[in-house]
Image (cartoon, rainbow, N blue to C red):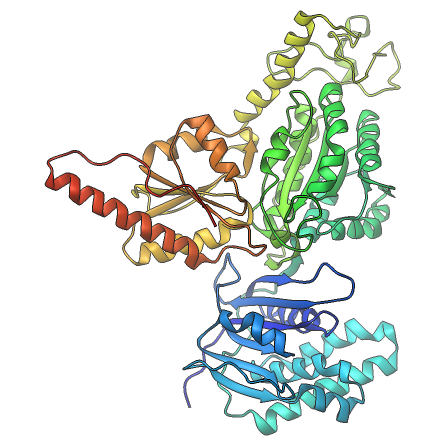
Length: 608
């Protein structure tokens, strides 16, 4: 029998929403995380309540990973559509496990191993409930992947005991039925196995959970929110846990009320936040302007989804970057940050609170559906190195009779005293343009001076040591082909860069986490060191590429995708190879003609 791969597995489970696809995948993920394995996942689910196609893919590895993998080693399909929609994503030599009751022909491909399993029949005969076929599948997979049975049993008890002993016993019946079927019928099935490692157990959380935990770590006082896919889990987590630590939670009637609540709490001196998606940020834009005019800190998490309008509410996209930077009337300076991993969702939210408070302005954290929904392992010490830096008022250092809430300073940041502070620190705070005391003023000189003041804070932030070294860099240091990307696209880019370097194509990448302001100390050295620049991002218009071109006057090769699913690393690798081939061809032609090297950008600005 062929030797089985250990601790390197990519599994995709697909079926209909409501069939328990996510339950099976998450259960295996939890056990693998407790075994010390690294995990990255991706899931899709329908937008309609009536249901539809549902899928979850996870990758488990002994080594740290940044991407859920392009292709699956094993595909488990509960119905015909699951095969139709996912068969192309099964690698050559992979294994298809499918419901034996499917009556339509199964697509054939050389090298694929086919295993028909009567999931539904086992569930009906043993448990008496066809809905238990997902637990039957869990039993089969746990046996095939050699997962510790005590861990699986413990997991089911944790999940189902609170629903009653009868429910728990039925699920245990389904689990044991699946294990017994695998023992008796699938001894020749060769799939990768997972074994406990010497590494410590890891935490498993989604990007939304990490963002919520980050807000708690940052000492958030108040959360105001309205549910919207794919950010709702942040609100749900804080609804349960923020009151436990003395914080205030309020579900509002809409997004306008949510950001208004954040504004009011910030004015009163609280650390406040909300979470939403692109349509919600659109509704919040007016009060984002008010936050800017009144120079108040606030944190807004935007989990991006496909748009415009309702668009693709359960699919991923990176199309709100320009909205985050420019999306309010007038000149509204805002801090814009973008994490690339689940762990960074936690860390960047903490940083957002620190920066928003220090610079007295709103900070927007850009997640996307991929990052919000993906389960990923995080080391248990994730909170150990966090720095929560408060910038609190010090009224005792100010003379009340000379206090100016909007005083002009070198950094643009004015002394802040909370309302109600005794001693004559009263001031006017409205959405009107104003002078240093807060008195409304409408002449062109005041507006020009105060506009410059508010934007001076952005310039000061770009030099702040708090954000120094935040960008990720990887690849061949001497490469002349460079990649700049952002957000969750960093994962497939990292894998593509590694593959390209292994193929002998020198390439390197920079992933900024601060997108407004663009940090010159990170970007300028990188841009000056490369001659060809590729910018992959999940939007149609190339929003980061547009910012880079307009700011640094550099040509770019764009790789844009709006498919509702993340990039594959292979897509990015193919674009790298295309650029490298074109560079080689042009360099050879220039050499034959006695010309110098070609310095222009390679590749058209394309939208895929």
